[in-house]
Length: 387
Image 1 (tube, rainbow, N blue to C red):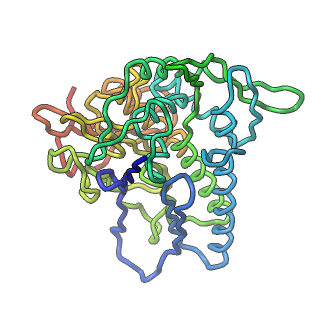
Image 2 (image 1 turned 90 degrees about the horizontal axis):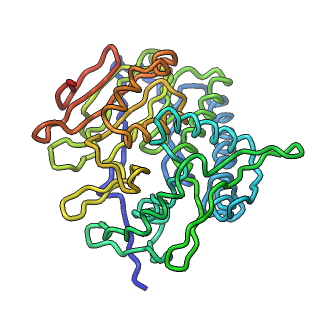
């Protein structure tokens, strides 16, 4: 069967651009990179001694291996593989990494009124946005698979699959149980049968896993007394310490619509803010998407409809949450829409936890509108959003 390689040429590669505005003092940061976990690139830049960097490099490798062993879909012995293959009522033993992921996902689920949903994995795969479409040559392995056209766009899936997979979503599909000193995750929903094939609820912890990695690497840096540098994972999660001159970084957010064409060049920025000692997590409809008959279909799923979200939200950045929670919130808020984004931005939870929001919306005549609860920033492209 013919195979098609799907690249990321039409997809945003770098979500964040960082630069140092203060004068250079000649000191070079020590760089650690990894492209072997989670299908994304990790970049850590640290200003510290060689000895300290060596300890952090070893610790980072251990952190990545431990989290990957839990969430690697290609490893049949990983938690995620075992759970996704399980039927209703089957118990899969979990460790502290999964427990933390579950609790973070649960919090994000309720904070976004269910728009962040880790049980959306079947829908993500149905629409052509799961890891198997990007990490290797794609081949049809599921009954619902379609072949993409020359531009990488997939024909629309059958409604029966959309409705079936939508019914598998919801946090009520999973539950933690404790028995005889062990902790398990259990599926609570029956599977569905479509065209003679049975499908069960599945989890997608991809973005959350990267956030967990960033959290643990930052904790490692802090334990070693490192105060300058940053940790960035893929296009979604970054944590900024101080810059090399012990001041703020200039964080530039990639423009999702730099020329009104619906594409991003990965270089232009629409928003600039000076930050340090804080995390920032971004999701957007320009990260992974395809255009079919002039309409955009992105990896941000609306579990209510079972389709990619279509609500005029281009991008959402959550600043000040933990990296794992921020990754979940940014995804959920993208799916929730403008009013929910604004409601959350001014919520007691955001205020009490020092969380700030930046978002880009589609405005009148295709003009980009920018919303932010930060006190000091610069809009580089677009107009201020007005309700």
